[in-house]
Image (cartoon, rainbow, N blue to C red; front, side):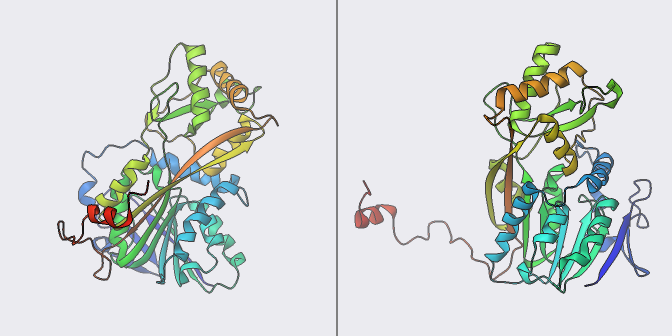
Length: 378
């Protein structure tokens, strides 16, 4: 098993040809062979997340990550199961950010992958994956490690058979753009697999959105040690809203968009994928306390990265949130639940061998005839 470590460098945010180079054994790949386009970098694209801060969160998560996380392992396992439904093989694959360590550990030969590129914005996360590579057994996969941003893929066009992302793309400022780059990097009939955290429509207390909540991890900590957590779970959102209304007399406008289930198919179509498929699962994880939940979110790298984030939240509001959470949602055994909604997306790059819909109006039998033949089903 061989491993290589690459690094993508950006110099002062410049879009010049010398600012983005993928270096490997002294070889430089020219910028114009990459999937991203520098033409759009100076555009008016809305930026919601602080990507540099998110990289730091990923660095911290590399040190806090649990050896085996039941949530990320379950999502990665369900995502990789889709490879078993495919008859074709995927010799060259890219694993893109998120829970890439869980994907690599649970791959177990699925997809007949021969060359695997592991990519993340965090150097520490990539280093952790590289150090874990010898423990993966005799899978005979040539593994490369790249430090790069999902928003600017350093991948040559039509060079991949598979792109897989597990719980990472929802932090990109331009999700459709990132998916378009993934599609450009795929060979014809290549497969795109992704799992992202989805937002629910809440009927109580607040509109459909994500809310930000600042939580004090220990009650005896001074105010300057407030930790900011990004809330995307219905129970924590409700507790946060009630606490803010009670302690501050209103709700802070701390919202951030997250893809809804109904939008996921549109994202795949907009990116140009054929045969799009979307399904959703909800997972409920139980914790001993609200503070254990916060620690888990930090270990997952799911902390607040909004550009217009608030520095702190009042101590009494943070403690009230934890108390309300436990009083409203605690189970009989004393544990508290957190609900995670995961949207799975599947898309293929177009190829002549793929099935295509018939021309509109070309049907030779009507539904009325079918109903008369087989009955109404009443």
